[in-house]
Each structure stands twice: as C-alpha cells, then as structure tokens.
Image (cartoon, rainbow, N blue to C red; front, top):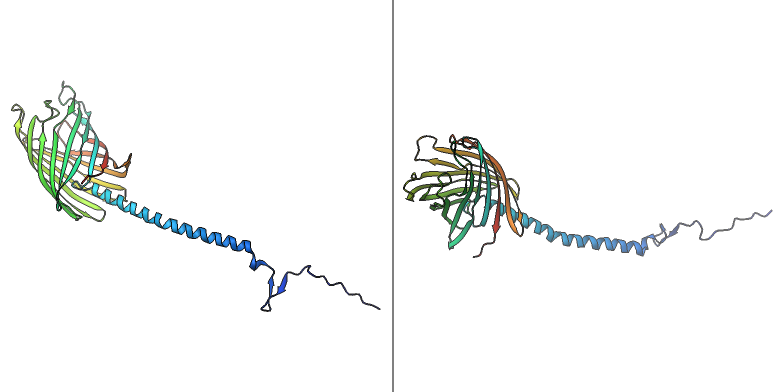
Length: 308
C-alpha cells in the first residue's frame, strides 16, 4: 500500500525566515525604505521647529522685560520718558446744585540731559475745565485754568532711591474767578520715591506763593501733596493708590481738599507708539462745602521717542 505525501508548498504561509544569527525574523520590515524616509522627515521637522522656536521665545522674553521696565518708569514722575498724558476727570456733587465738574488735564513731560549725571524734567499741567455754578444764581463757566510748570533736577542712572527738586511756576491764564487765581505764583517743588521689586512709593510736593497779578484777587498761599503707592502686578498692568491733596493756607476754615484715588493702568499701544491706558475712581473724605465728594478718572499716556 502506497502512502501519498502531501505536496510541499513553497512560499505559501511562510512568514518568517532564518536570519544570519539563527533567529527567525519577519521578512523585509526592518529594511523598509518608506519608513526610513518618514522618520528622517519627522526628525528634520523637529529640529527646524526647535531652531525657530528658540529665538522667538528669547525675543518674547526680551519684549516682556522691556514692557516691565517701561511700566516701572511710568510709576516714576521724574523718569527720562517723553510722554503726553491726557487725563479726564469727572467730579461729582459740585456747587449748591450738586452738579458734575469736568477737567481735562494735558500734562506733557519732557526730560533734558543737563550733564551725564543730571536730568532736567519739565512737567506742564494745562487744565481745561467745565465748571458748574459754585453759588446760588451763578453761571457755569468753561475755559483754561491756571497752567502749572514744574522743573525737577534729578540724578540719572538706575537707582532704587530717586530724588528730584526744583522750582514750580503758575501762570494765570483766565480772568474768570471760578477757573483761575488771577495771580502769578511760584515756589519750590520736590519728589522723592523708592522702587523695590514691583513696588513704587513716594510723594510729590510743592508750595506756591503769589508775587504778581490782579490786585483785586486774593493772594495765593497753597500747598500740593501727592503721596502714591504703586504695585506692578504683571509686566503690563500696574495698580496705584494715591492722593492729590491741596491746602489753602489763606483761609482758616475748609482749608483742605483730600481725595483718595484708586487706579489701574494697562500698557499697550496708541497707533505706532507705546501708551498706558488708565482708569480709576476716587472719594473726597475731606472737601469744602461746595464739593466734590467723589470722582471718576480715565487717562491715556502716549510715550514718544526721545531725541538726544
């Protein structure tokens, strides 16, 4: 009896072959040219991404540092920045009818290099006022109030403790008694502040006396005091608490006007220029009978390039 053998199939069902090391391996997968090309492309793409991302991250960090330095300088009244602030104030409950007074302060700041060690900072305040009646039967007024120009001599260079001193001059710009004093006035002014980490704190002060002007108007003997405390929350956001107190030494009653203002500032741009946008509110715990009692403030500070 003959036993037939099953024919031997060659090539079908064989998934492994004997390799050079005596081990079975899958045929052809380790030498796939397409897989090698994919791996090479992924590696090249990863290297290109890392090369491109490195300078971009460094530039972003540099931009944040520059913005933080700019925001810190904005908290310094005698920094070497050329700026044009436009400050809008709405003061409530003014006069016997408790109306609103509007004040637009245009406050350009111009630094000048006197010597390599000293800067001269010129600060001008030009108020444009819409004033409600201050007495029964009075009339509202509108116009430019007295213009105040301050000059601060301040040391240059980065210092945590900063001092600026100089003269202040007040120019009468209106004959309207509810808008201006009608007197030429002058006196000393000073600012002292310290910057430590994200904190800036200090005070600005001036005292003026009248020396010329309308003889029928009262003499001017007035002090201004502005203590301030700022905290740089991020590289573009700054929080500030401050006061802009005045004392009229010529009167014995209702001498002080003391507001407490809370402000937030955001560093951004205004067209092609850096700018700080500010918003805040304040209350007057001490004020004359004719007010005001509280206020709202908005401002934009445009920063301009300095030509040396």
